[in-house]
Image (tube, rainbow, N blue to C red; front, side, top):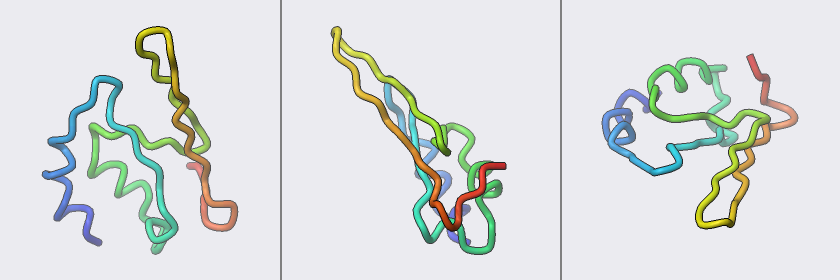
Length: 74
């Protein structure tokens, strides 16, 4: 219920590789994942997905795995 209150603050986040997020266990309450994603259009949610970030010949993989009991990729 609080995503709208913090959406403007989160919209100001900037990162060279983009802004990424994963859902936490409380984000699944009420099955509002789609609403949360829609409220944060500049954020890439990693839902059973990964993002590879490379810098200077090195890389790191950001990985987001859905909760086995609560997660449902739509």
